[in-house]
Length: 176
Image 1 (cartoon, rainbow, N blue to C red):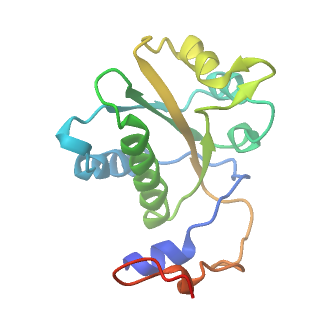
Image 2: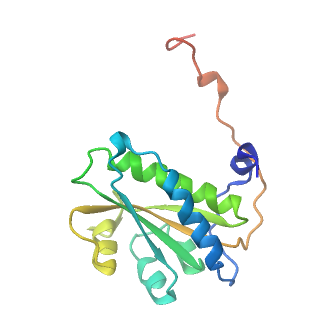
């Protein structure tokens, strides 16, 4: 698929069909990660692919709200990074999360970014809940969970709100 077409088609999908994602598609999504950029080539980001319904159900309770897509997603990819290894792990993990979402669309799948960093379940940090459930080492932080599957909702392609191209400047900020 052409890159612009992928961008236009990508939507945050929160309801998925009860249909497993083929192993080949998961492998293709993971293969795309070899092309990730990383600040200073440190590559602090790692991934945990989850296809176990019980684990998906448990991690769906890690936040006060915003995790409903995990209830129907056949897989989820937890994006973690060694926060000691790199001071820009947040940026590297965010780029990785975006690659995963766009790769899913390219493969005929849909996805939803679930923010974990700086989110809570009551007074408890969501990343701590996920780390405990998945045995993630203490030097790693959880950036996001990407829910992936076949969409069970039809969202219109293309946004109804567009980025204002008037916010692009040449050679400096234009106060207008």
